[in-house]
Length: 452
Image 1 (tube, helix red, strand yellow):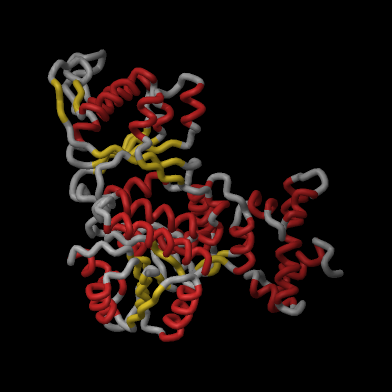
Image 2 (cartoon, helix red, strand yellow):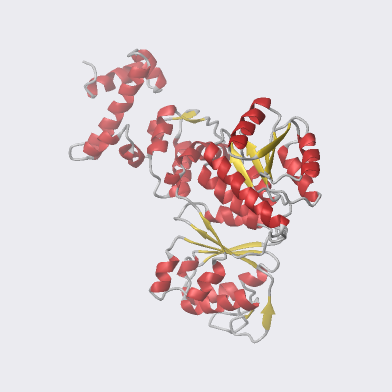
């Protein structure tokens, strides 16, 4: 017999559409119009996969998923929604959802996920699939692009395990946020989260920072001091920029990973720890291994689960949400009532490639908030390098000579021309929009040769 798919959605049009698609692709289909009906049919029918909407009037999809897992049923459940959020994605994956799809559904992607779910159900029925992950509290990050959805899914799947995680990505992509999300979604969330940047501590001090030292172990060691691993006992230690660690310290870290024990610098007592290790790097560790700068055995110990963070230029659909979040925080911190960026300024932000990633975006937003004089941030609040590299202001690259005076004049000219165009060349309205008095505005028009 063909595999049975249960579709649970309160919208009849969605149920009918999915039924037609799935039937055309060789599946048997049953439907439920509510969460409670879905719960009953999952128990009675034992389907091979479930397509489950999240927003339903009686019991939402997340609750249905939780109740199904509490009953011990391990049917693959694919959540679908038009109202996704970071928290919902992580929570869904931690509950053991098979996957999480956003509406409008791409038919080919949906069918691929259903096919994989059916295959997994076959393994479950033969007793070969692993245990589902229990529910845990979700943490929040910003961005709902497909690449970030995959990051959240990975966090949800590994958070409540003790697996060592390697987070990879360019500088400024938010690797520490991912490490924190893993920790605060795990059973260790009430214990310490200890961060150490391996690149910011001199090589001769890093070992002491990690493993501690005894009194007199070296010049300046006036008292004994516990290391980060001791402080992180039963919690999580985040080793940022792991690729900068010396070979000697790498060897001692490998022992901690293998034996969960170490000695302080200058000490003889063996200290045992229960620590979850999350590492991060922006380096090509495979290249470092080939050049002899990183231990291959340590790499495989650290890289049990890999989370690849995309650069901001590869998830530009997240920029608007990121900007809104950053502006809200900066505005509150500096007690300014900033509503956001103007449409033109946002266009520039969207067209820029952000080599410094989220860190650079945050810097630009905070600078704009600090320098602002009104509730809406405009082009004039953006740094010149962004405007030069945007399509709208690319002409700045061709300023003859590139002197400061010429560049400033061209920027002023472009902004004033845009204000005039937006106000149908009404000079009074344009002056008011630019917060200039009319006499100063008219003088500037003459100075820039816009009007006689």
